[in-house]
View 1 (cartoon, rainbow, N blue to C red):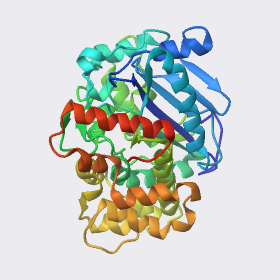
View 2 (view 1 turned 30 degrees about the vertical axis):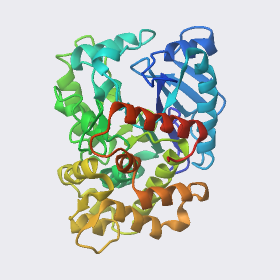
View 3 (view 1 turned 60 degrees about the vertical axis):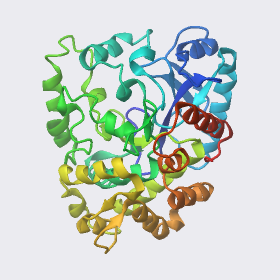
View 4 (view 1 turned 90 degrees about the horizontal axis):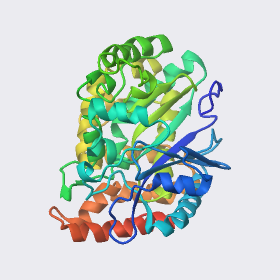
Length: 410
């Protein structure tokens, strides 16, 4: 979102997708993001603008972030746009013997051995993170996510949007989990990226909290409940002040009052932009329903404590679409009268209810995800409980082709 723009709820969207750079043959990570950006700009840069899209670096050199170049009025068409950018980058990576790979984490990467931190520009910030937290781990250097930025204008809209997002966050991994394997092993979590991510900064617990944000529905309360504790707790570890509190905040959704937006961060990157945007479209439809108070009033939405929501979230991180939600009040918040329901069935009920508001280009992908489960579920069906590295490598080679062709896998 542009700074200082007072866009109203759902007037515009901002989407960011992270991709890993891997070897075309071995799928080993290739830390050449800086060289790719230099090839296009003629010098080492951290950002490239290409019309409606842009690219930027991340903390490590084997990762590129693709994003809408400013606010866009619709999610429609973005899957094709992101796919075109993937194709353009893959053409430039060919000379390096590399290509982009989707999903939320590399299943065979060794972060301790293969991590190379970004050595240009804002490297002081990245090295401060590394000094305090140690960034040579899966939760730092082996994770790729999709960020959805949604605008608000003023405290009243912020309070409505933040309340709705807090309710939807716990069930998003039932759609988007894509990381059942790390270190060549089935981990027992469908969304291992999130399980690892939530422990990234255990040294300073206030930075991530319970991942589900606290009950803050004004800018003042957000500063008091979230920013101030982070600022206080980081100070002894960062006396030079290299790390800004806005960027330290690592909850599953973060408020950016500098650009009047909330950024949702719990969505794993999928195998193709068609799947990424299908997930985002469903999430937006659910948020619109809640903000319109179509199921429960705002006061009831805002009453939910983060601890109860975090318990549901952790179950869905582990079991994805098959996580059983047994909180009747939570199901009631989504207009359901059941006593218990799997998270995947909850999304199917929402999709049925909201069918008229879903974007036509994404309905086939949504139906596939709802019927067959998130990508993590589909991967496990193919791989089984004890896959070999060779079998994993072959399957992820297929996923790289899904990304190149913008097709859901398999």
